[in-house]
Image 1 (tube, one colour):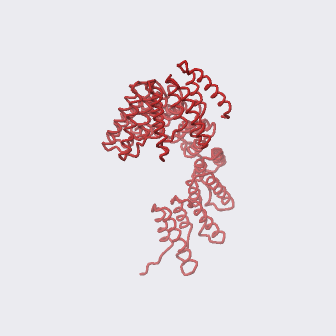
Image 2: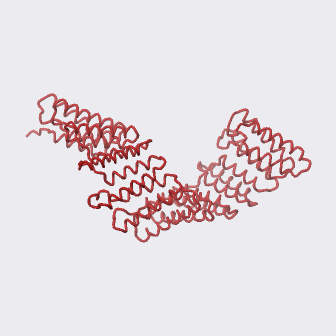
Image 3: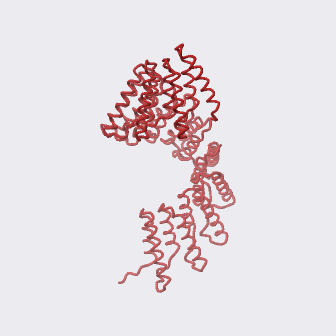
Length: 580
């Protein structure tokens, strides 16, 4: 017998395309099937191919799942087509709750304030349709949650306020007898998320208050308000809100919530348990707080997390983000011993990755952060030598197959900086050796270690700080190399204000005959260059002027003192003419 296509067959085909995961192509194909089916029915003789609400919903779902930019617009156009057909007398086609929820979801996924406004408008339209008799279009909790989520994702000014308005409206509707609309933990989570993403002042405190209100309602009547039982996600959202807030007490508030989660979990709430995200957010809050001792607290929390994971709590497995936050906190803290502690955390990362933990991947950035910590640690020669050892460690890891760890220009610059800051007599020569090694590697084909302006500036700084006889001439020689390479067309070697100022500083510290005159000559070169080109990168500034004045003040040669005083006056008069 001949197989006769039916509406059900077409609907199944459209549904299959919607769930195929083939994005816009699937949605376009699904809509083409609906158009073909409708065309056949319009021609007559195909009563068994009459489109229904079900096939329209399936096409809308295909667009909603597609993630195409035009998806929400197209989904809403199909909804309008359904509404028009129904108004023209087609009783088998009528937008229902599923239709609206799917279109609203498409807008919510697209993000942006316009999307939130569109979702809100659709919700308002559902209420209007329901009032005039379309009982199928009645909004429910899911509808409200998706619209609130759209406001949360928009991140625009006032978005959190709009989300809270909807939460209040849900409470009012439920109190007035609407059993289909009742706020749940997802609702509160979305409103809290709206505050977290708003970036507005007081957002964290408001998110905290909403969570406290939700917990209070649940504790007042755990049976009637069972859907308000707090979970890990909603706590994490508030903690994350505190972490991002920049409020003075944000870190301590975030940690208080971590402690509260543990107590509530112990009291018998199974879905409320600190996880890796919880700890990482609290660690990040401490890392960003800038408080004295904050880095040590972040480090302690990581130790606690690792101990609990080792004891069998699989939810507390530290990941790359966790380690990154602690390393950054320690490296930037300037606390005594911070560099060594940051290196210990890095060593843990390397060990875990070596032991097969793919969730922890040390990268060049992690190593560079630790190197920077050693450079700024004030540890003298020992810190510089440790920085070199870490560079060698990176090189070994890379040669053993770790492609995520490879020394680059920033790596070498950090090692150079460690020597420049060390104050050791061998510092400038060791820095020169490292720079020469960079040059050799670059010329051999390693494009990732090309010396740049920062590299040369650091070498000049090393000479300036060395106090060695002839250091100033050596610093000026480095400047001449930069100038030649820059004139030859390599912009990576462009001398800047810092370069010239560091050379002047080298002359100032030299105490050599003619130091003040040489310092003024470099200042004049900068002034002429800036006047000629207008290039802000070579504009002398107050630091440059101070360096020249220092050269005058530190003049030790009796015969130079008269000139030095005159130079100091000229520089002072020049400073007075500068607007900035």
